[in-house]
Figure 1 (tube, rainbow, N blue to C red):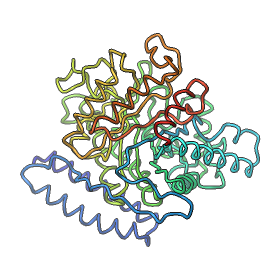
Figure 2: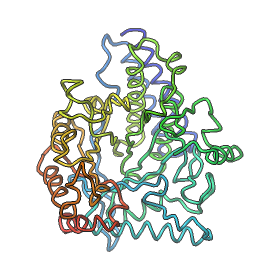
Figure 3: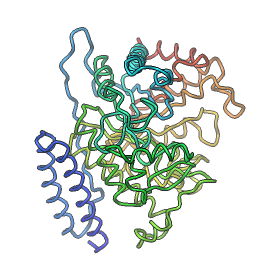
Figure 4: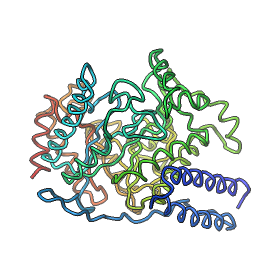
Length: 470
């Protein structure tokens, strides 16, 4: 093993130890903390053995097989869905209150009214999801650098009360878990790893700065040297090792404290736009030695985060699934002989996320590519991409869930007219038929929950209910 490889192993070990120390600090007498100590010792021994080997392992992570817990049934309520059921999921976005909480709950209501409105809205949504046959909700618990649970690291989300850091008076994540599990619906905690804010407006800066007196304060004021702009948002610099440790500790906090069924990262890794690129030149100068290009270094950084989070989750609770929902195209065939016959924006080249490699290395329990195009979209045909991903996961233990564009159903489009033909039902049926007929595709996730309630989607929603709801 080269010095560079040994240094990577040692750095990884140090990061793991930091995360484990954080978990233990949360509650030093908890069962999770005691288990973390034992697992940390085992991990240290394993990594030290690796450093003495002549060749590094293909992956730093040996994934545990999924463990299915058999919950005690609640009288009158179904148990949680079994592992062999196909995924029938939906994303529930909290960023900008896209799906929840309702805007009306925050504007001009008393704390008691706000809590009642938010909780009633969530239970109403869960009742509808159950009636449609949805068995998993991907609940956005970290839409930016704020939290939907009482975190020791992040301030409360302003989406709940209108102010960053203001206690909403209840624990939304725990409420979601309690109510979803009562209905036999699983919950995956959805994290946006790097986003700090959705814009860079002066009012946003003022709101973030006001958290300096809070405990915890925003990372925006605690670690200003970690903050960059990209895509007209404030983001964390993925190239800083301490940033990856910090993100991993947030995931660890949720995994250690809550009975979640899974953890999901979305596609926001290096999230740039043409007019708002990430300036990480200084970070590259400091940490990028030995890489052929900045692009390779960026992919290395994203790889390190995924390895670190995967390893940490399995140390804490092996039964908790870890997945990523990336952009639908890994690479185009024109750029890589292993790529798909498409002409779309590629995660490998634009988000600097080698998602295919993560599947091949067993870092993920599942991958959920966002295939938001119809069969007729020649640049990125749904069937071409679904079948390409099915071949990628085929020799692995990683499950494949396909993300569908419910948000496009019923919306007029000259480029994609299929979404409006007969209410979008024929296109939706073709996509679901493909998913459910391919043995290497394990289910479907709809983007996103609020579109189940829009007038233009009601034909499609009725079809879903007849197909999934029984």
